[in-house]
Length: 110
DNA sequence: CGTATGACTAGCT
DNA sequence: CAGCTAGCCATAC
Image 1 (cartoon, protein in one colour):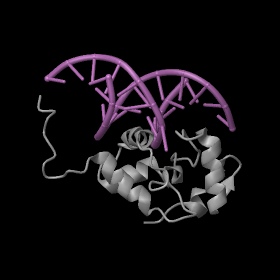
Image 2 (cartoon, protein in one colour; image 1 turned 45 degrees about the horizontal axis):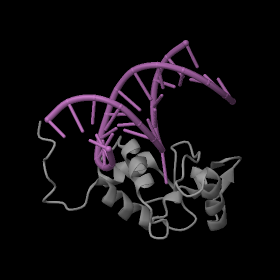
Image 3 (cartoon, protein in one colour; image 1 turned 30 degrees about the horizontal axis):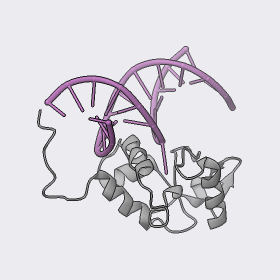
């Protein structure tokens, strides 16, 4: 197999792209892993997105807390759990419905 | 290079 | 409405 395709034409890996997009999410808005994956050009790679997020440790530059599940539910967070994630979102003005984000109102519109 | 894993999603029971 | 299964992708070991 040729797993070593080598991304010479694109130094950025899938994760790098994800970070770029995530960093563009405006405050008070959120997006889903699936949507994020689609934006980077890999629809269906929602899992890969999350995998990169936990690998990312730049919450200051990469607001990974603005990325939630497709149903608006908060999933993991490598800096304090979904609890800290929820708090951050609330603090930014994201509308919550019970324990889930209201994607209808706070969903990020690209 | 091959296998295992995960911050997902959609579908079915 | 809640829980479980199977499918998908990229990364790490």
